[in-house]
Length: 112
Image 1 (cartoon, rainbow, N blue to C red):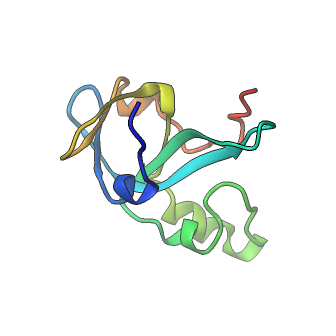
Image 2 (image 1 turned 135 degrees about the vertical axis):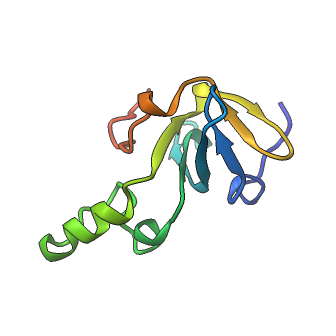
């Protein structure tokens, strides 16, 4: 498999298996393996990355007063498991599932 840079993925449009637009890639979820490598677990797609840029993209719990606002800002985000990526085309990324099956949460993705 060719090397893929995070910068090549960020901002790329994402479509589900019916052609519905899921937004653009806002972030890449990785984990550090015991062997010292980094493994891509999935992508975060959506229409805005404001909450994630504040550090509240799923790994950090926001303070109580900000929780409803940040939840609202993240309402269009979807977590795309790497195994569900069907095509990393030059113009867009296509996933093998429909948008209704996708969730915002990726913290539970603890493979390995």
